[in-house]
Image (tube, rainbow, N blue to C red; front, top):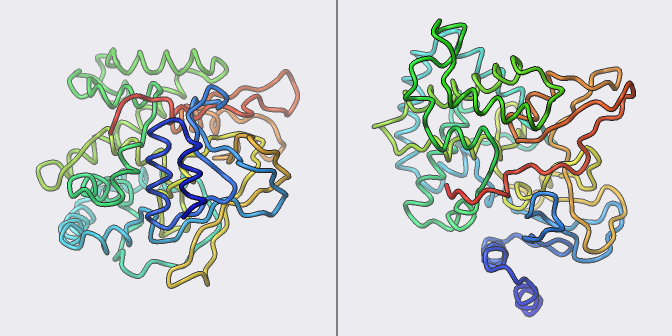
Length: 352
């Protein structure tokens, strides 16, 4: 406890201090890391080492119950879980083949991490509806002032995709997709595509437009299926999707502390699952290289190179629209310029 008090005293930003205090109450330990709001972070806010670390050293430990998963959500909010199960069964019956293909595509896009034990309380077809159900549980946590709410209220992001969803203007314009509506593209969507291309000029605008369209279709589908049945929020849905990580083909999670770490092609930490730690296990963030004190920590969200090590603009498009991270090739070499790039999700001042 004394060490924790000293840690809080050393954090000058009230938001960061509140988050670390919450981590302590929920059982997250950070012997070698600290969230900091500072210009030294590539995104203005990130996770830094608090001491010299050697490769293989554990710097953060997160109990499984702290993660937002469908199974943990059902345990904490059983009444909502019953409502979501009914909606899941209805939506499964009504789901068209195009919707199924879109969901399978998005499941493949998730960041993948080491496998974890299968959740037994998430129910059948849970993996098809992780986006909608994690959003519902997050909203319920805020509504009930559940311990998760302290963390969820700090979810932030600032990039063209999140701005577009926050404004909600695409839903009020007549045309959305040129291949469906012949009258053109909504002005707000064009603005987002143009803003993205300014960030990543090597990615063709039509590919950015297609990726933005897929994300908006997911939001539209979510609002259509869940509005007026359970509380909904397009903004929180978009935030949840960008922070989630695929643990297995059946389990997707948003993991506190893990979701605060920014992206770099040259990552210096990795995550491991400790199956035998407690009843449900725990996650560990481990130094993958020697890390000096006060160094920002990075995960590699996804790879943007093909099998030959060359920059792949399809993968780069998803990196851009999913997390607001630009990348580009460097000359004719295989080196990709996206090292230590801000994910932008911690730069936003827009609350969920």
